[in-house]
Image (cartoon, rainbow, N blue to C red; front, side, top):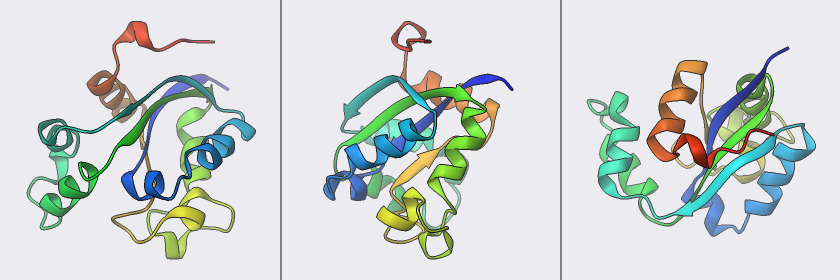
Length: 141
């Protein structure tokens, strides 16, 4: 097994529910360590860059509006097979289809406001981490 670093965002709806501690606890109790974290109010341009792959989709503007509506928690998570493990902990994109005990089942409201984001591949993790963190900010344990 390989130690990986992946990217995660606790989205505005979960932040408003004061779920940061519960979500971080799920990561840590499943073997992921927080290598870096910062609480930020996303700038519109940064959110647009992050979601650039969805630019032509009808929900793009609504997604950017949502992600800039309140602070978010940006995190670099580290651990054995961190990308797959994080995706398992998050649950299905649609909270209604997510397994019991997953973050999205517990804290997500709908497909768009599903509480958390996590990188879906090593390439995505590298791109997303680089967008929000300097290499020196990530503390490899």
